[in-house]
Image 1 (cartoon, rainbow, N blue to C red):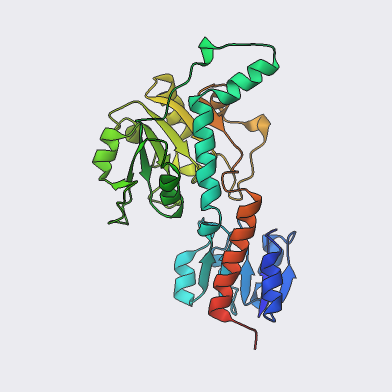
Image 2: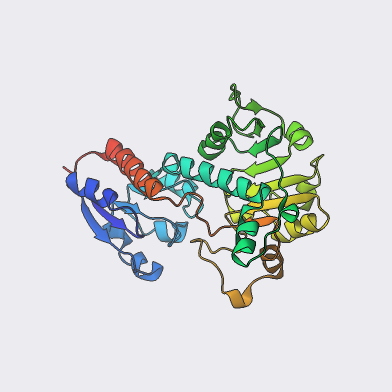
Amino acid sequence: MRIAILDTVHPIIAEYLKAEGHQIDFHYETTRRDFLAIIENYEGIILRSRIKMDKDLLQQAQNLKFIGRPGAGLENIDLEYCEQKGIKVFRSPEGNMDAVGEHILGMLFSLFKNINKSALEVKEGKWLREENRGVELKKKTVGIIGYGYMGSTLAKKLQGLEVKVIAYDKYKTGFSTNYVEEVSLERLFKETDILSLHTPLTPETHHLINEEFINRFAKDIYIINTARGKSLVTKDLVQALKTKKVKGACLDVLEYESSSFEFLDKNTMPEPLKYLLKQNNVIITPHIAGWTHEAKYKMGEILVNKIIAVFGKEQ
């Protein structure tokens, strides 16, 4: 097969596919418009998020057999059209689930113990102890929404911290274990101290975390979002922080990111984001929760093995 790689991914993908006899073409700089003119030449596509695989583009892909996307998110691919046309779609969320889980723990510890804030103060010659008195995670209830690869991995990694973990997933049941309890959404609203979101971006989850949703929690909560930025309404989070309904937030993704997760120009930064960046009880990282050296390799290896398992060697 002739396969196009549209984004920089781990070289193991091209290496394995070439070993199976497939032809690999690299299109790291090719624009959507230019690729539209040549997409019919390809039977396989490997990409991340740079070019949207929508119906307009895919209609020209007369010979396309598969699309592979390292990682979890598939919102830049028209999955319904692919299913209609028999185009297989592969992904590899297993590859970065450990990285995401570890990142969440790091952000939580930093937020609860004022690690980032106090470390910067010490570098400025400030030795503030009482002002940086922390909060313990022990006996807190972590509520997880979305119990797929990322949500379940976080639950496992929370073992040993003496927290209670509850989880809600609209499309999955029967996943209670000795370290997580499956609950209804209403019970999650009632018991949660720390909310962690692990849902894909769909019309159903777009702006899911808004003012109404936040106010349904019985307690004042902390919010973690390492899933998709557009699942959370930033201005509503700001308001909740001002009223202290939200006591703090850890955000690895932002509503204002582009579809390829690039940041917007600082000169046009929205006011809600400007506010968040000034708050000591908000930690923002640049979409790096799953961005480890190990994860890059694992995502590539898992993805390419899934592809080879279906299509095998080039005949």
